[in-house]
Length: 81
Image (cartoon, rainbow, N blue to C red; front, side):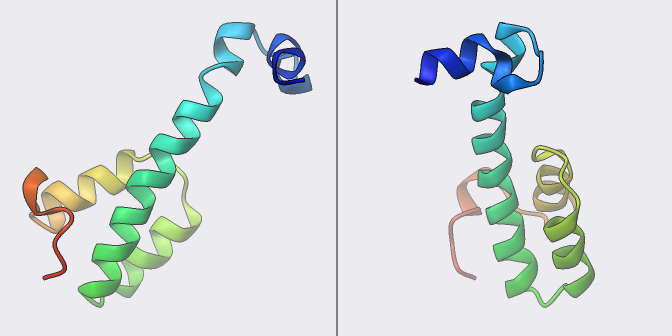
């Protein structure tokens, strides 16, 4: 069944290679959205939290927030401070 869905491009007429990128992009975006939501909530930054909740940029806005505005480094992303 999975292969049938992939061959049809999720029923949207998408090329096979584009349809096969959908799930990895979705997982990538969910990962970065979760981290950004967590850090913005811990820092009581309501406007960032709302933006992350409603704007989907496949992780781009979230990555910018985490490394530029929240000033996190890669090794501090999973700490609770």
